[in-house]
Image (cartoon, rainbow, N blue to C red; front, side, top):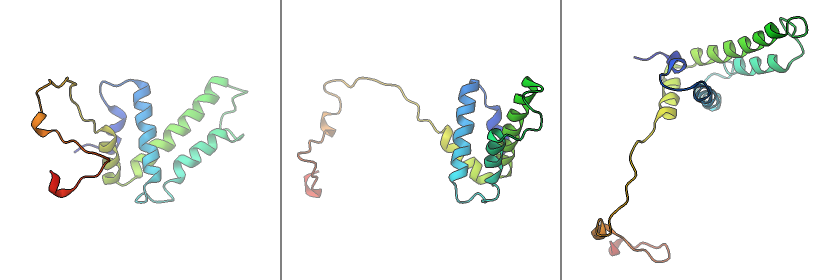
Length: 130
């Protein structure tokens, strides 16, 4: 059985794809009513910390480290939120985001499927006209 945090370690995808996936998962979990409201305060608090003037390590004193602490708080808030969400809810949303129908495009020949064609006028279909 896969862990909830396995979404962080997907194979064969780039950084931006992983980031987009995580943000979509976060958004879906935030909208889900099965996730506790108080738990939803974690990512909101992380975002508030990002824009607030209060900083653990001021950017003016140590510019690189100041930015890193903001990134660390965001990462910690988002990761902790996903980890504490109900496992079945996270799995459901992860599966929905990863579900892709694969196939190949091909042109239909002129004679293929003629016996299955259905012509409809003005959008009305009557049950006896099948």
